[in-house]
Image 1 (cartoon, rainbow, N blue to C red):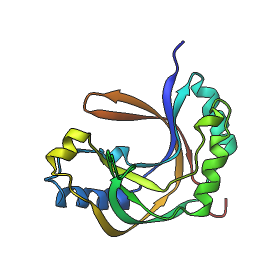
Image 2 (image 1 turned 90 degrees about the horizontal axis):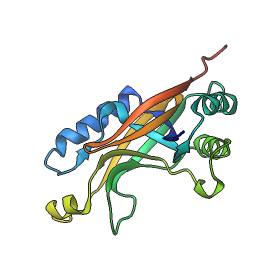
Image 3 (image 1 turned 90 degrees about the vertical axis):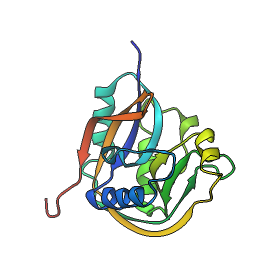
Image 4 (image 1 turned 120 degrees about the horizontal axis):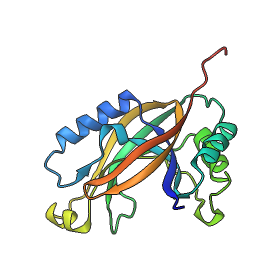
Length: 182
């Protein structure tokens, strides 16, 4: 049985979807593949191959039962992740300690290889491109200060399905946030 390419993330709320859409409209001339609004998310655990989705969903619920909502602030939109060979447009900011801790805890779930673990980087990918696209854009520089605030209130296990037009993310399970006083 083949595994699925999965990752753990937190879906972006309406306020971040809206500001990303505004950015997209004001930068419509860029030759990039914009991330669909429903695919905007924070990555807590980067992709890996998983064969037992049901067991992983149960482990995710045990590791992060009813997570508290976390507010984040993105302060810059730029090319990334490597400035010498960029392939993304993303919003970045200082990670809240709670998200860094949650990411480390989730990266220790069964089935995630230790060599795949890495420190949490607060980023919201809003577009992708390849080196040909960057040449067509004239090797533009992109570094715009922003003040994008957003609330992340649930954790999802996603399957990442690669398609010619870009990755499609399918939600496999979700751990919703806890409601105050319950």
